[in-house]
Length: 165
Length: 143
Image 1: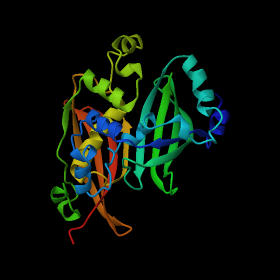
Image 2: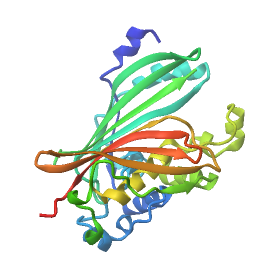
Image 3: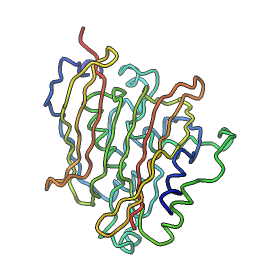
């Protein structure tokens, strides 16, 4: 994809979704990242630690849309098509792999079980870099997750990935 | 939980959090795939991974970041992180022993809250760096 076309997708929306934070997936996820803290499993332990409900491990927000994502309550104004397909489709057709380069979270308040969050992912940067004779195509997306009831921003997630030819 | 929670007075620049070490297995990748919903076969299907030119399956970057997250919250307490960033420098392989390293970089006050900035990384037993990152947490004062 030419440079100008690549830059033209900056600012475009990739996905929008509503997610319900559920206890089972949170506890399972804690076990998967080797975290045995009862705060992620037991409401009493969570209350003793000062929470009203069970909190989530710090990296759970990266995967939360794979759980508690139900077709009946998704936003109606979904973006039409994914601009990343235009960029990554032709690259993947020629081979290579997609790798996760960097991840960042900003926590405005803890995410807890029972939260209903709405998030929209926007492409905030795209660029290419040459390394050892291979082209690396970078994409950064930013997702701001808001409390579905109050509209208050809860979490910002920045996801940088790249295609390596 | 509360009585062992750290206060800002307990933390100083240069302090290191307890090291968390973990011997990586293919079962870790499978458990993480199931719990995260990330079923990219490069992380669990040896046939697929070797056909793609990799020596074996390798770990999800987010599993590594998750291990660091566990070491961070063990140290500062759950719900206290305000920022957590990681760069995935190298893949992780089954059989490697990964160790977390968390060092307090600075203490400061922001919006009348005590903040602690930390450098964090995940390295194998040969000292090869897998993940490099930074985190910030807010801490209560004792007063």
